Length: 92
Image (cartoon, rainbow, N blue to C red; front, side):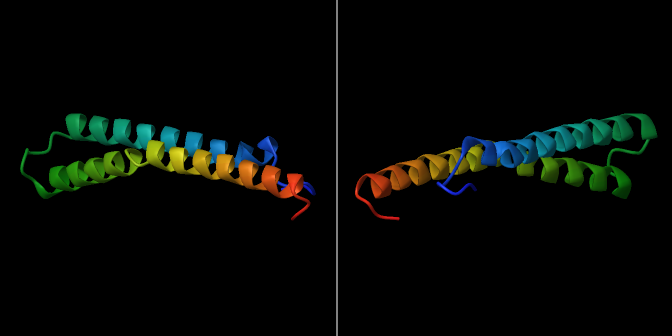
């Protein structure tokens, strides 16, 4: 955050975090799928169920990324509007 408030360059780390979380999540789902298909486990074995539960958890986590992105974007818009009105009226 600069001296005059929020800047677009401050959001680079947030965008990078979203991209990294997405890439890591996608790769972990791919690895789980490959492990399940090549390991030769029985369908109901404990190992197959553990990998299935891990895949379900990761995909559940990844479904929240768009919602979090909308919340961050809305926060940025609100911050820009509040700072614009505050500077217009001689406030903060």
